Length: 525
Image (cartoon, rainbow, N blue to C red; front, side):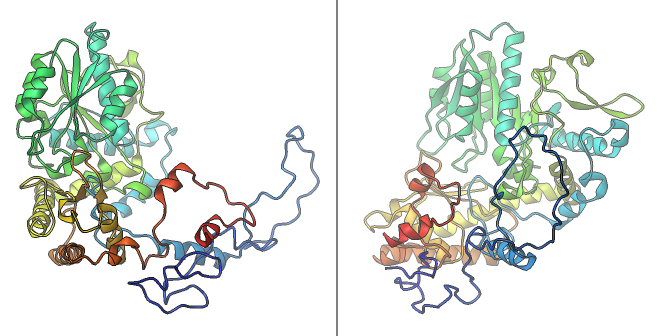
């Protein structure tokens, strides 16, 4: 049985593979046990003194609150300690290698953060008069220029807020182009490779297209013959990721582009993996009509919980007239935002968002571009690919790679090396937590059984990669030796033991209630 702290939470103390020494507090050295902030509530305690309000006449028609608001009462030191302790439980790119495949958790240079905090950028408001934000508009225009230069595309929509939002933008531009051609009722089928990101078919379906899956070959690429067999007068587009989600470059991409264009369709490329080819390959040269670019991946701006994201979409000459509003325009005197369709020569399909996009992300991305230069961006892509191939080559003798390689920016493994060991992908990933690593992406892409997708990124040193590789080698050899106790209950050393993630997703406890400790009650069972 796992050890319990005084709140009744399992700490992992006493389990095999973990320290057996129990403590009165539940703390383990500098790994401090922390209650929920609501559990630390002391009524009347506050970091400030608030005077009783003078009498006033309520104006809410009897709907004003009569009970406590429910926020916990704590002093300022208690609040600070609570959140600092929570931050110390987070795994972050600033504390170690983050191997999530297809997520590109790379180091965010502090120069980017410094630039984004300059008052002229950090304090800008989207409703300011445009003449007062000429510098911000110039930055957006400059970033747009370099995005077009890197991709070889003539137009870019800057407003989409993230990758999936960018996908929606690109596919809406394709839908608008089909409507302009009078084919909105006939071309309703979108071809999507089975290894695509899950947002691709979801985006197509949301707009009203019918999704038709394309199989992969045994070596992990799009089956070109199967693709061509699905082409017809009802095909609107193909949505293809390149490099694909198996970490491989689609070598037949120009042939695919030519075929879909000949059939009257468009080519949407998922640009989530652009960081593998930026500075090396221009998507426009490959025949692509639309592609989103995750600024929060390729150009280092904060990802995930550190967001928000940004997903500008580059467009070909065929789709440029349908780009959404707004965009930056220089009228000869000053920069301004074009915000109304009647002020354009094109046929914009509308707006993606209320304003112009994520200003903080724009500043960070341009800072990254200018500090690296064209040679630095190219080197970053090359180093990312080199790192992934180093991981693949170093591990494929003890782990199993479904495709021979070489790979692009991420190395893919399956679970066949674990066959007969009693250890599964999830167990292997949980054991990585005890070794101080965030697990890699698991069970994705779906075309590979028990997939483990590792993306080391260009920002890792060889020493960092060597330790990571040695750790995974040790885990793989341990599993093959039958040391299942190392995996079955892992993690042993994390602040919390293995959780029932399925139950948590299906029956989440989203509201704390006084006197109820669901975690402790569950542990006691």
